[in-house]
Length: 162
Image 1 (cartoon, rainbow, N blue to C red):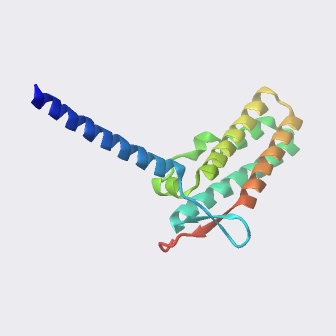
Image 2: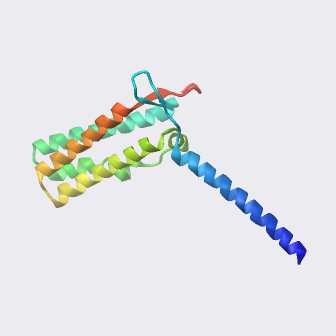
Image 3: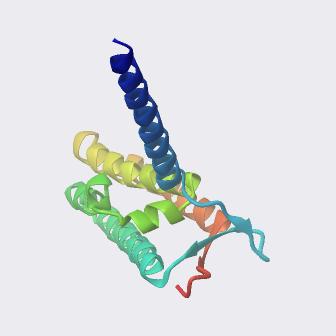
């Protein structure tokens, strides 16, 4: 009976260690890196060249969708507004490499996910509400988030040669 208890204690100890290590790894992965304030007052996010390319490509896609939405609004084509907005919604986030997830601060990731969700909301409202002015107001608010992000963050090369 004493042997069973001793073995059980070791199992519990090992389980506790594994859970603690998994929790720490998850925390490091999802909380992301810390930033430093750059010379221009923005938080610097150090990324490898490959990770930086991913973020910049995503930003170009977002800007392209904004241009497409703007053009569609000038034509009062809410179906095209929805199509353009949905192209960069949450479904467009795709697979993000773990290295990038870890390198980005939580606030930046939260802001980015929120932007993708806002594009989905613009698409949904364009289809269901069908009001050009409403879509234009949503787009203006979304662009305010773009400006806030760019005023807050700056991408830099990581020290590991990236």
